[in-house]
Amino acid sequence: MTLPGSILPLKLVDLTYAVDGQKLVHNLSLEFIQGPKTLILGPNGAGKSLTLRMAHGLLKPTSGKVQWQQRHPQRHQAMVFQRPVMLRRSAAANIDYALNLKGLGKAEAAELRNEVLAKTGLSGIAARPARVLSIGEQQRLAIARAWALRPQVLFLDEPTASLDPKATRAIEDLIETIHAAGTKIIMSTHDMGQAKRLADEVIFLNQGMLSERTAASDFFSSPRSAEGRAFLEGELLL
Amino acid sequence: MNDFSQAFSLSLDLIFSLDARLAEIVLLSLRVSLSAVLIATLIGLPLGAALATLRFPGRRTVNAFLSSLMGLPPVVVGLVVYLLLSRSGPMGSLGLLFTPTAMIIAQSLLITPIIASLARQVSEDLWGEYRDQLTSLGCEPLRAVPTILWDGRYRLTTAVLAGFGRATAEVGAVMIVGGNIDHVTRVMTTTIALETSKGNLSLALALGMILITLSLTINVATFMIRDQVKGESL
Image (cartoon, rainbow over all chains, first blue to last red; front, side, top):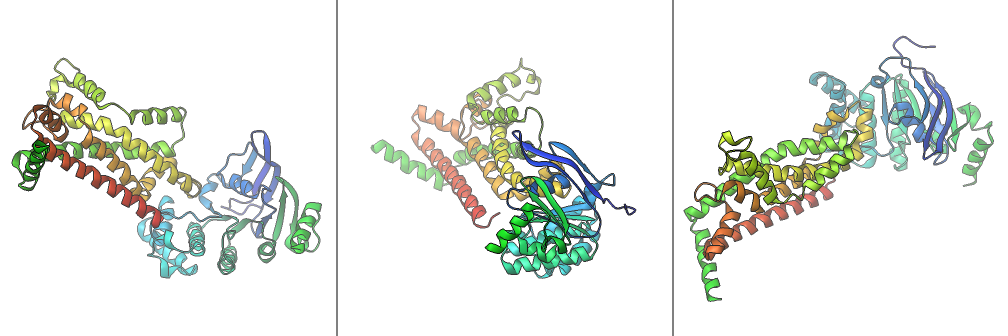
């Protein structure tokens, strides 16, 4: 199942994250393969964010393992956070900074940056200081910055949680584009509608444990776990 | 009271006639303190940023130690530098005692911990905001130091200004290692101390007004920078 040069499949083996003895993520074992957009769904505090952070290498699991298929998997993945983190420089320089860290030369970086700015519709604001952009534009820039790195895997941690519907729409379109270009999408959300719109498969987490993993087409019509069912019904009742 | 008003008007005369003696003292003060600030900035800013981003055993102890050095009594710093530079001291052969260089060394020692400590606080805030994102981009903590220094440049200016304020205002260290020698090592603060005790109030007052103006300017600048940083989310 491993494509040559691919860091996938990603395997999480018995992943546990505990704070003061309290297990926030509980013996989680999951495998992520190339292809489907994977949405990690669950209520607040389900452990979605912690799981993504451990998979991406930002958090050290208390026990368990994160296994990739290549020696330097870090170079081939990127992450977008709930609140965009903008460096105090221009939008273009934010992307240049990331490319520079990857060891790209100036000319090469500029070319790649302009390309990704055009694809994300941000060319017009390239010279503006990143931190004066609207929050929606900042998140698009954060995604552009991540995409510029040509990641095989893109983690997104509730990327639209602080955005209005219009900005959310723009982000979702971008995610589809990045997926279509061949990047594996692993994204968390607590927004049912968003999961419906984007997911190819759903991983439902509750209280740090895996409730179920189901193809999206099945999950929303007939969830297999009681927690998944309750969550779906709770959403419908609202 | 009459003496005082006379001294006051005399002091204004000194300032506005750009009295040569006064200018010499002010310029030496600025030369010594600005040199010390330059040295302390070159050491203190990277040190402060590195202490914010690096994780190593004993980090908290180092931070606490550095913070406590912020309150070093200038006279003690002066004494230590005096012992190092005095003829029988380990660096006595350099012949630096009672020179402006000795004063620069003493002030650098005095304000490096101040600039480093304040820089660490600014850097920690920034690193808290950036850590996940930079780590995700593959930025090692040490590589993050120049990023933090650049992105925190406005806020870090306030740390440098605090160091400058402290350097120009202190009297103990420069008095001991400089010796307050006329035309050689006499700076604003040591001159004020000497001239006041001699009863030459006009020169002391003139220097006092310049010193206060300097200090006010530094504080206003610091305030304006903080305001700017808040307003424009720099």
